[in-house]
Length: 160
Image 1 (cartoon, rainbow, N blue to C red):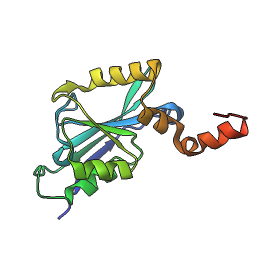
Image 2: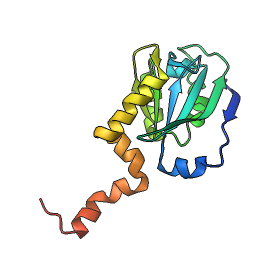
Image 3: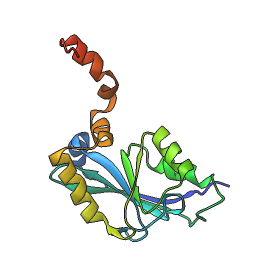
């Protein structure tokens, strides 16, 4: 039996639409909206933020009924669906099956130390955006353009 979405709060902000166009959407597996303290598959909730180099805004809070960590693969579907549009999810742990399904959905799973403060992780992500993003960040920011970048280089006369 699939774990149903219990609640979803979306923050509505008139200026958010322009901000959303230039922001990276990331989720944090959390029970308290302050720290990354949940295993992905049994997470009771996600805090979803829009992050740019200079700013971070809470976009959504998603809550689920509690689920066991092992033995219920159906629980993953609701959690992955809740991450639609997210480039990544930060969690304290994530299983192999969930990793494969997240990657197929275009979401990069990232494991961090249990209890890592969300604000601190956002700061690290912003630093990475400033100093040289990881491949998953570049891919998320580039979106549909990433697959054809070598074709574009060839058209510009790029040669090995």
